[in-house]
Structures are given as C-alpha cells and as structure tokens.
Length: 334
Image (cartoon, rainbow, N blue to C red; front, side, top):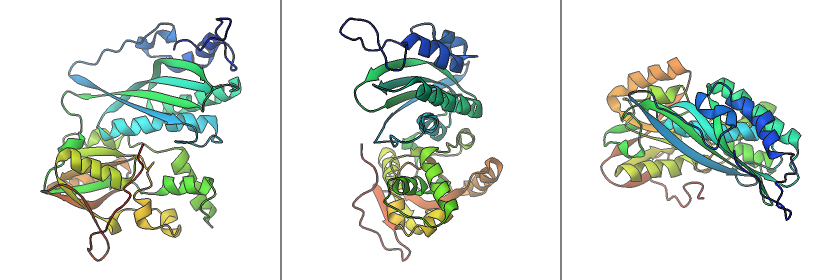
C-alpha cells in the first residue's frame, strides 16, 4: 500500500490518521499467513502459482452512491466489495487465493470507520479462506471508492469462459433473481414490502451477496459457458450469447424468484434486468441434467434450468405463452 496525497507543505496527510499506522495497525493483520504479502511492508506482493495451475485475476471497483449507499455500514461495504470479486472467480471455476485492495477515503473519514471496514474484510477472509496481499490507500475529495483485484487458481486450461456455450446446451442459473434490486429499491424508499422477513432478505441480498465459491470449481469440466450475473440476468445472458456466437432462448417464467420477489408485485421482467444478483449463469449439455441436480444437492445451492442454446445470434426472451418479448432494457450499463 503506497502513499496518500500531500498537502501544500509536502507532508503526507490524512483525516484518518497516519497512512503507515493505518496500514500497520489495521490492514497488516489481514495479511498474516500470506507468505508473499511480506506483512504489507514492501512495495509489491509475490505470488507463485502451484505446479499445474493457472492464476485467474478479476477486478471490480465500487463507488459510494453508485454501487452501494453512502449510509451502508462500513463492514458490509467491505464484504460486498470482496464478495462481488469472489463471485467473478466462482463463475470462472476458480478457487480464491487472495486479493489486492485499493481504498480512496473521502476527507473526513475517521479511523473507526476504517477499523469497521477492516473488520468486515477479516470476517470474510475467515469465511472464504483468503488473505490480503497488498494494495493502496489514498485520500480523495470525492466519494468513497474501493477497488479489489481478486486472485484465484485452477488447473491449467480449465477456466470457464463466456465464449463456451454450445448449441443444444441447457441454460442454468443459481439461486434467485431480483432480490438485490428489491433491496436497493426498499432502502431508497421506492418500494414497500409488508413482511419484515422479506425486507430482511432483500436488503441482505443487496448489502451482502453470496458468491457461489463452492459450486464454481465443481462446474469445471461440466459447464460450457459461464458468467457471473452482476449487470442483470438478461444483460449477462446476452453477453454470454454474444461471446459464444450463439442464440439463447430464455423462458422468463422459469426465472427463479424468492418468496419476497413473488410478493413484491414488481414485474418479473424488471427483476430479471435489475442486477446485483451475483449468481452463476452457465450452460451445459442436456445429458448433464442429473449431474447438475446432484451438484445442487451437494453444495446446497438451487440451480434452475431457464432456457436453451441454439444456432444463431443474440437473446430471445419468451413469456408464459411462448411469445417473444420486445426488450428495451436488458440491465445495468456502466
């Protein structure tokens, strides 16, 4: 982790306290046990892949007011920032190894906020068995901005690609769709839900995604095309179709909704384009249906067939009568 901006005197400054004390006291403990992190005392980390393994790298940036609410608790913000990256690794079939962290703290951020943030990271490091390897910390006049580069590993040549979907494949998605979108709408005051349980579910899905880190590696050698659902189910299905050079037919009525989603009154098409689901969308041969059902049981993850792949291009979405829908908005665009 490198330097903060300097004031007019040339001295490194921070409203949060000394940069190096923050690294030493708050972030260095997150690097314990990682031999290539050197206790965050060097300018870079060193990582050697195991023999016969590839490293898989992914990076996401989250900005307050765009990807999370400025009022969200610091520990939950940290966990979301980490988990959205772990979801990408899972969709590639990779086991997580470690991560690099970059934080741009707004002027006025206090040390207690940073400690809570680090506490959220510590909790998820324990959950997912990873460590901090290094990064950067700076001050900014703008909103809190976080960037994480997550590093995973898998056997050489076994990364699941967007471009692997094949004609004849079945399209599958894990979990349920639309809950995180409902959580954001609820927190923003644009939605009311009568059930306290439903409110808790959707807010939890928005603030703390559940990356399918156990299932992802189990899909190696089974899934043909795979992508993390972040921009919206429809948008990411379209991405999968375009990268694979195929046509995907999606049955909107088969898109899985939670009890909260069903009770929300929000149109199913809107839920399928809301984004922030962090599920795995993948295709596999029709002959693998029983194997996939067994994986769902083994990993305690719901997996639903929602469409099929054929020769052609693009995405077609069908309603309950089998009629193709005219889609104007597929999902979130950066």
